[in-house]
Image 1 (cartoon, rainbow, N blue to C red):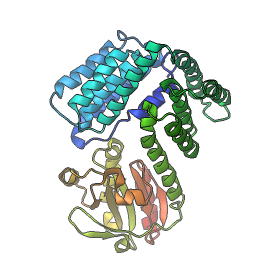
Image 2: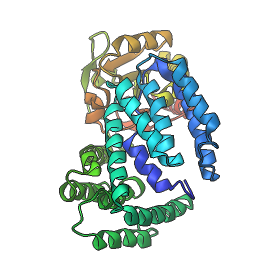
Image 3: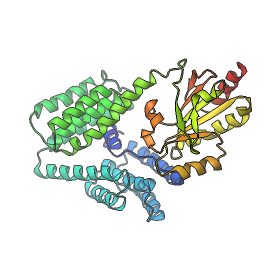
Image 4: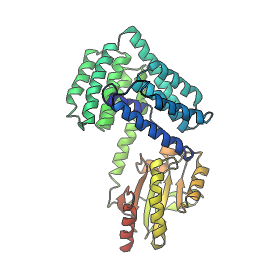
Length: 389
């Protein structure tokens, strides 16, 4: 974002209140939310950041909430969270944002967003106290200037550590100036630096070190309370990258044997001689559903010639029937490995999967021929491999 909506600040907010996957029944809500978010982004980038400017989008949020009143799903919680985030980060109305986060915590206590709402409530309350005392106001003002400079550079494609060296130097100078102060404002500066390294430079090691410093030096602040979760995400990312380097094109895909929906053991060895697509997906994953027609078409056209699909579902523990029904309704007749562990699914963790859809196309010897093929490229590669058999 530019001008009064710093892209850098938005990045941190998005990390702290990230949208979480929902089930297939919430697809329409997701689609509407995506459209609202795009309009909000366009207006913010054009400098329209008042409540009046966002009146149509706020009305859409309210209409969605009214339409689904009483429904306690992740998708509906996301609608309320989206409205709260709009007031917090774009309109800059802490009072209304606080009320919305409190409503989110109260109305959706079992959602994955509830603890994040709790953290945002604590953050707003701490910030209000700091503003009241005036202690952190100069720090926040300086960080806003730095954040705007960073946002402008990122928007221009200058997103390397070298390009942003002057801004990093200003952050470090601010930390040095307030060394020994254990306030929310100084913790905010260090959290921003950690977010810059993790989200912009993709340097998980440096981000983890900064977050650990945040935990140690600013214990008791709202930012330190969020550090463990952020560290865990960076560690998972780092481990995933390490695993992915062993699963390059040309490598043999490791053997596995896991149960499918029917309880049957699915072993990669059983598919020797076949061209196999390993498809990590979930019924809540919109990009997975968008890609499904291409997988189905390739399967219908080439299954009889030796093309197989093995689905590895990242659906939640309570989604067995949803998964089985979805597979049946969409004529997905291939095996679906499922353990109900969501992102901690055994095979997802074993093979470093941290985003879906994630696919591997294997030849008859189990070697990786291609990864993450999309659209017609999948069928084209399947045809090429089958012709070599």
